[in-house]
Amino acid sequence: MSQQNTSQLAPWLQTQLSGLLSQRGHALLLAGPSGLGQYQLALGLARAWLCEQPTALGACGQCGSCHAIEVRTHADLCVLMPETLSLELGWPLDEGAQKDIDDKKRKASRLIRVEAARGAVGFTQVTRSRGRTKVVLVYPAERMNMESANTLLKTLEEPVGEVRFVLATEAAHLLLPTIRSRAQTHAMVWPEQQEALDWLVQQATAQGTAATREQAQVWFQAAGGRPDDALAWAAAGLSAQAWAQLPQALAKGDWSLLAGWPAARQLDALQKLCHDLMAKASGAAPRFFADPNLPSAPEWPVLVAWSRELLGAARSVEHPYNAGLMQEAWAAHTRQLFQRQGRAPAAVARA
Image (cartoon, rainbow, N blue to C red; front, side, top):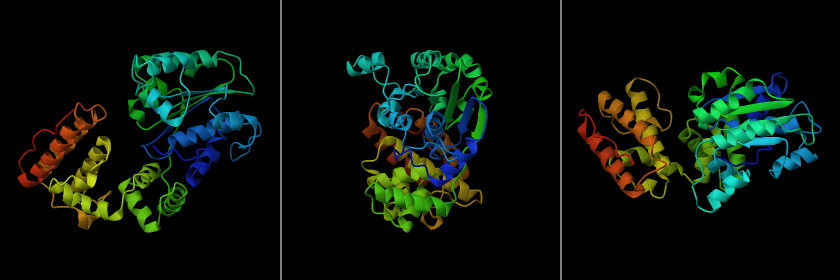
């Protein structure tokens, strides 16, 4: 996930923010695929709602409220996130949760824990500290399990006093229907390519990565048109040459171009290769790789089975028992399925 300055929104996010600020209602749900800026837009809304001198474009960026959000100390803002993401983005955890993690009594949770949801409910029932409203920001909302979602449900439907909610999700279908029905849904807008490339060059350069429009085009394609994901590719140092060579290398079981990548990113590359081969086989244009760089595809049943197996592997990729052995198995299996040309592939190694 990109961690660019969230007070300076990308142009397409700023346009959405301006439109959303004119809407009434106490709860908004920002929904769309990953990489479209849900977190940045949600935080932009929270800033504007809490700002002491808001404008039609959003928060002023200068008042005490804006500063308090910047340093993560605003008393009227509750950020409900998985503990792992809170730590990554600098949002403070509950004192008890932080102590448990520091004392190694447990690991930081990748889900939004019910204790945190109960804390958010308690937050809404306390008198506001400085402004005209309080804000609860939930991201990614699909990381609430059944218990934490149900804990928040009643308050989301009928908040006490002046409380506003902004929920942001990258998988709206995983949310409880009762959660979705209690918020106005906003579908995230995909940026125009030229606008996104201009932004990507600017952001990558600001982060110290030499960037041309040609290089930005590679990152943008590797991300499937998702700007946040493209910026993550830029930060990872992905070169145009490596991305062009990757499909043929993977088909041969050559893992060298992926050396040093996290397991989740390696699996993501395999899924993108599988997607593009399936798209090409069905007469559609590939999305992530240039057509001339793709290897000859296995037959359709092999691709379908591979796609399902990769999806299954993705469910446990963040918790591998032995990441090195798992990746060796992926490399060997990928080479084998391209050699089979029609026979169903063996199961993808799972953690």
